[in-house]
Amino acid sequence: MENPSPWLQDLTWQEVEAAVEKSNRTILLPFGSTEQHGPHLPVGTDTMVALTLAEDAAKKAGVLAAPPLWFGWSPHHMVLPGTITIRPDLLAEIAFDMMASLKVHGFEHFVLINGHRIVNITWLQMAGERAKRELGVKVVIFDPAYMSKSIVKSLGWGEVGHAEEIETSHMMHRFPDLVKLDRAVD
Image (cartoon, rainbow, N blue to C red; front, side):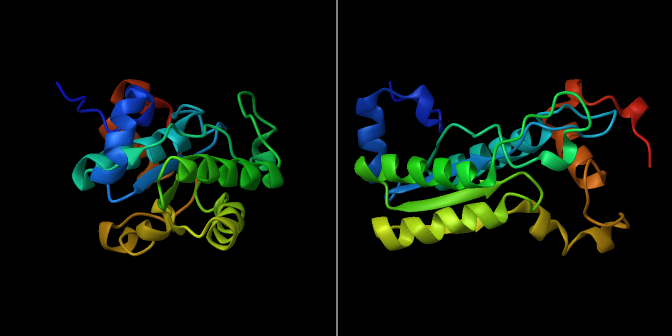
């Protein structure tokens, strides 16, 4: 029986090998962060958003998703407990190394999914540019915060920000048991 999981880490190496061709050599790489998200959302919100987007897209497109990177550049949130930040150059290096490793196994098209609300973008762009130049691969970046900017006004919501209506609604939809809505404040 074939493994129905879209997650690379759930497959054997033989299943990954077969999936490379079936996926048109495409793989999704979710990136997030571990940082405070107000009093009502868990510190893993950004990564959880990225991994659910990756999982849904992978299933729909018939491609794989790599394990998420749970850490991003978050020095601005270090004032509150639970935040883990990594240096931006390290983030770019890890992203590049992930693509370089997967390229060895046949992947050539990478979709980087950023759940860390615009903040990781610069470093992912640097990694993507380097991967294009040095590895000869195709890289695109998807950031739901950019996508959200086009719909928030029609929903009557406030600006795209941090732990706001968009992140909260995403978490309520996918991880309702982790949302403490009674603690949410404007």
